[in-house]
Image (tube, rainbow, N blue to C red; front, side):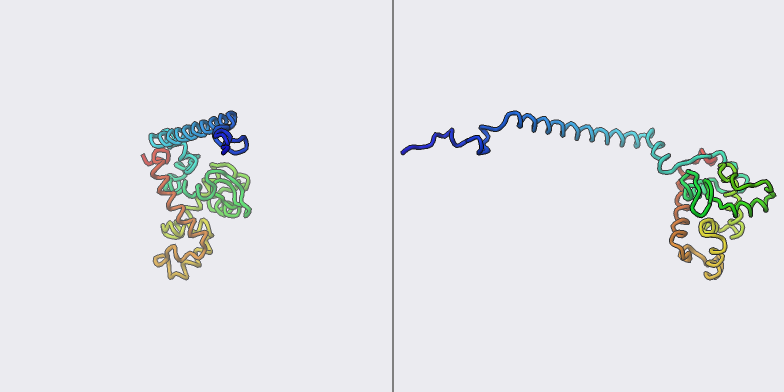
Length: 223
């Protein structure tokens, strides 16, 4: 009986290993080597980033992105003049603009998003007869008026910062109405704020006030 020689079982089209294309095999090996090298490099990069953040130099750079602070000299000055916590001022600026001045759709201007109508009201109270709305684009003027308004709201609510912060966002008349419906400032809490945006605003300012005090104690004049 004739038998087919063993070597004929591996024909060119049969996919057997004895006739595998050497060039294709080399390309596969090179791709595998490249993938392993890229994986090692990616792992080393992650370790390097983690070490930089953990041991300090990168922490400041990351914080400047996630919790920026600018014009700290103006903030300290206005905190002293208006008897405000500098971390509160920084937190309000962060919440309003992330320290990137802009003009809102409603016309609020600059770092602390002061409305020209509010600024005119404050200018009359302080004797600033030369005020013009374009002044609000200047950080010194904008922070000064924003802090004056924050001081005015704090005094209006007898030192209740929750109400003052809420009014900075939602307006004095709205908050006055909420306080009245709650039965007075003593009985008011954040759950009485009907605007979800304002509730979130108050919570965020409180949180960032703590973070600015913790991370920027020297810059804000706490030590």
